[in-house]
Image 1 (cartoon, rainbow, N blue to C red):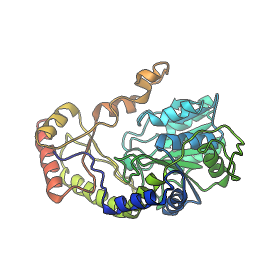
Image 2: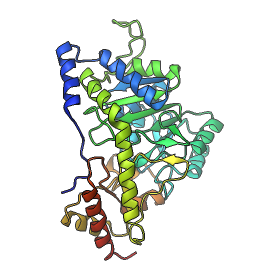
Image 3: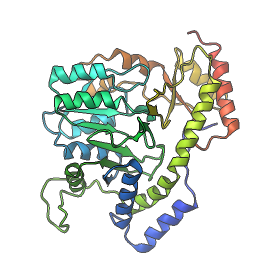
Amino acid sequence: MIPLANPVFGAAEADAVQEVLDSGMVADGPEVREFEAEFADYCGAAHAVATSNGTTALHAALEALGIGDGDRVVTTPLSFVASANAIRVAGARPIFADIDPATYNLDPAATERAVREIDADAILAVHLYGLPADMAALRDIADDAGIPLIEDAAQAHGATYVGKPVGTLGDAAAFSFYPTKNMTTGEGGMVVTDREAVADPAASFCNHGRTDEGGYAHERVGHNFRMTSLAAAIGRVQLDRLPGWIDDRRGNARRLTDGLAGVDAVTTPHEPDDRSHAYHQYTVRTPDRDRLQEGLAEAGVDSGVYYPTPIHQLAAYEDFDVRAPVAETAAEEVVSLPVHPALSDDDIDRIVEATRRVAAGLTV
């Protein structure tokens, strides 16, 4: 079976972890500070704050921006539930705006309507599948309303918008280093921002509200959202390899798109001219997803659905009265094919051949 995801670890990661073990400083130590500095530099940002995972990074970013009880945050219904959960855990309420059918990201027009109608307190944009949202339009909406714009960049390491890396397009951004992401620390996250007034409270919030003085000086209520030095050691090695992996993902995506050209029953990913897709997922849509997945499995090709249920239709959100027809239709049709860097040329050929063969029997 050609796997949908295949995290890559080698001797360099093992050696880096062993060095941390030998040092005895396995918690929140110098290795974490080095990783923060290197990741900020990769994003072209002034600050980065390491966290225990991508959800805690989102939560910390919201807290640092002052988003809390009673606030309303406009976001997308087509994402992993963590995007909305972080808003709720911070005490705010997610307000779901519909998506653009081509990019699967927040539709600026729907976002603007939602911001105006509910007098929103923030916008949280998700760069779904590794494709940046329309950040210029969303930035204009946020600026006009005088509210912060937050990036959920959990799937978008290495993506760019008008040549600028994601993570520097809003007031704060959150990344995830879960094993299936474009790079991993095992588990981990990062808050990225150009604003010291956001970075400092985020770092404090992640460390029990401690101040820069350290010790037992606590100026706010916080959590233990710290990253371990073991995770940071893995992350530093993976970050060095990330540019090459992104090139591989984009190359694999091009071959898949070229190979699936002319297949009417399969719509391949759209990449606007002003954006560079990082292809965390290579997501197509088809009118008969079940049959496509069954046929792929029979051919030894794994696939996945991200996400089969829009967030507002999940049981945990049953009290949300939302209509998002574009997102709801997409959730019935999207399916992701393998695109990760470990794929061989033969693997790509097999994926294309199997998809074309199954798609030939589907009705558009």
